[in-house]
Length: 457
Image (cartoon, rainbow, N blue to C red; front, side):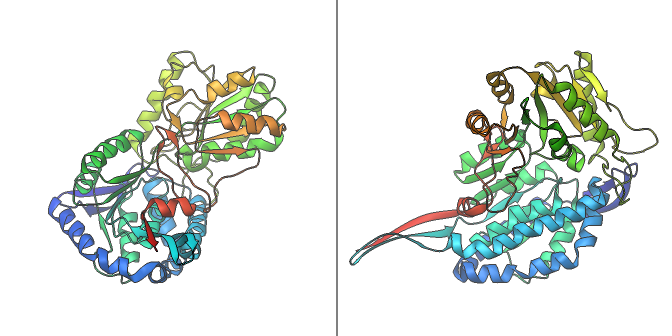
């Protein structure tokens, strides 16, 4: 019997617990049960489905501290961040519950005498939902709850990096007493995920790396089923010369270093006008060096560990490549002293060249590359010089320029100055290698449906 071993990356990889890896026969059985439950769940209607799911909100609030501490132990996220994350996750869950009927109810498209045309939103069918470890509870809510509200039974797989959190989620979901087969969970690494999507499913919902997303898209194409993919990012933040650096430094810090930099939508490349380049770097360096790196279970810790040793080794190799090719380390650039585990100091790199891995690849850790520009067109070219297109930031007092540059940057979301796209009513997704489809808002609900037109005359 093969097992997933959960270890604590912030405590020298001490074992926390273990979970049995799902066998192929178990995966097949759970998909079979999901398919058998499709009509039962569909026939309940969106109002009743939403009602059946709503107790999860109170259960999450009740178990918030337990969930948060387990997340902290499994992935190294500071406990205060883990608690804040769940509070934030619940704002999305609440929005789903309050808006499901509004956006999944039937719509009249044409009426003329006895003629009536309407659109109805029907479930697609059984969904395989596969999510990553960086926001363990939020990723579960995003990948499962809208699907269930839309009427799609879900077979869910969480990351192998947080299997105990996955088990706790399954235990909490069991308290809802949903019909058999509506929600189930499988455990394992990418092999288990691939076995799952090769079963008789109707939809793949995936958040994770672009490499895996493309693989899943190939499978979806062969099966001729829909795939909704939220993939990697290498977001640029463009700072023009008229920006107030004092006002934006704190936001830039959180946009890059939240969750130890392990965020798909994080700012990973800072594109700064040459007139404010030195001041921007100086202020960020001062702020970063004031933060406490350490035990994530300590409420005073600002930056915990990376999720795993493999993630640390990847980050070290990316930074070494940059240094070998001439990058300058402004701060950080190494592991902190006296801490055993997957720790890495928050880092700023300058003198970046386009052949460096930190520029070309997604950097999933606390490393920020900073480059300068002179003209607006140069800034746009640098921002778009990536295979990714998840999001971007623009900082300028010139609103016309902000809108002009926003229209030129190839990304699914753009934040201007104090703007923050993270509201559950807004769509989220990317261009290019950052994915296909959108989550959240009415767009996210309707992505999960068959859209049927009925014309009565």
